Length: 170
Length: 170
DNA sequence: AGATCTATCTATAAACG
DNA sequence: TCGTTTATAGATAGATC
Image (cartoon, rainbow over all chains, first blue to last red; front, side, top):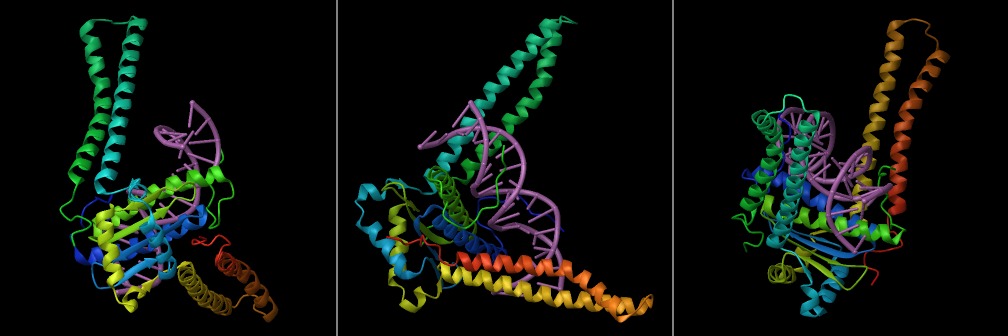
């Protein structure tokens, strides 16, 4: 049995797989919504239009949904957009965090490299410039892998920025 | 460090914990929504009214949100409510599934018990009625624990049915 | 189309800076 | 109020029936 892979944020090409995923994730999403509402005493709602037929999934039930929508509609424009999310802003925030991680990792790397040099000097054994450079090089390999990992993730995020299938194609 | 506990579906009493949970779960929910939209090419939206201030979190951005809301509004009533979820229906479905599991478990239990009897008979050692009953009793203890477990979960679900803090208190 | 199973990935509670 | 960490609970991809 092939084990599940890390999910890539892009359209699932195979339609039957997509349907299965849709069903599972829709259920999961509504469960999460109910949890949020109950645990934190939150008024929230969701509307999900099926891509496979004309069904609509809504939560909570229409009357209370109306209530929320009304309050949303009656909000001043500035209030409405105060905490607006879309694919772009959300992805931008994620990239921002990845970059921040990279920055911190770089600083950490520098610190480790410096520690290595200091240790090498302090130990005083077989100390010569070329040897030290080689040592640093080896240390660096591992550290660079970390950076590469992060860079790959950043590039992946960049590539994902705006998938051809925008959520609001209609 | 105390490790995280299994989350109970009820209002988090401590306000600061509730705020932290709200922030985390809101982020998680929107992430899930973006995933669903992207992976399955779904039009979906969510509106979250903060219980702590007047902020509103919406996804996607208002223009596309309007699009979805308009389409929802223009749906015939029957279509709108076709796949309606609320705390009650969702919980009912979960209870239904638990009951189904219980039923299957009972059947499985019966099968195991019967197997036990058959084995006992076939082996033909120390077979007497009272002994067999005792044996079954012992087997049953474990099996009943399973049933109890399920019953507890059902009762928990029943108790959760409509927490005092309805999602739509306002 | 939906139910079930399991390995794996993801979300997040709790604790702390 | 946030960011980070870590252990654990929870979600779900992929396979199968």
